[in-house]
Length: 318
Image (cartoon, rainbow, N blue to C red):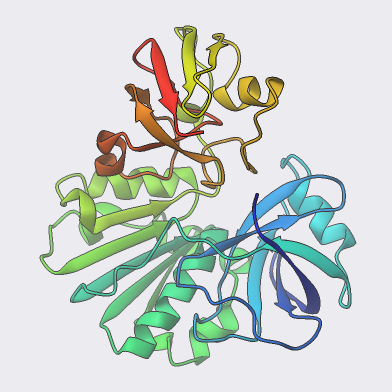
């Protein structure tokens, strides 16, 4: 089960068009669990939904978490509910921070790319790199300045000399090919933003070593969902030897729950990592957007909310 803590909404600030930040603190004033740059928390909403939001503040701040939330009228209800109901003084349940977008602090230099609300984890990374004295550039791409969060801080703080802004209505789309296509030894790239931006960065960096370019998705694409050629397969529960049939139209997670086996989960889209489960045996069709290509080839874990079997049977460490 995901470890939950109760936090108090200490402040709410309008950052940009439909974007607010929420400062979360311990109701007792005690330090919160530590986190690393790139971390996120699950927010458990009273309407039953669970949503993941990245932490934007510096990892050395122990008395608060700051999350950025963009109100999306086309969402499944999480961001709308949060914008419409959360008030200063409310207490909410969140998970302790976890990180699937961890900053490797051993690189010589860094290129950070944030698109829209994707600036949130990137900003935490920038703060950490500044504290470490590491050279970096931060590219912030938005449709226009009205939609760009944290502008006051990015323009006036100690980070301002590191930031390059790119607004579509002024500069056109971020020039990813000219900025990132040349392999730069000693540099690591971190990118979070909408699908179009991340696809462009992926295309521009296709020649880079796989361990030097990292992405975090805040929305799933079509690759995580069901496909017409999906087939049924079996999963074996290692602890009991029980064999379960996973039909083509159901996920492993659904079948497990139908058989009284609960695996912690949240997004059900392969983007949060909550349902990560150990693999004992079998060849997985990994459809999540979290594991690196190396991690997928190692075949040691899978996300049971979306992944399927290439082989006829998977043995799960359950």
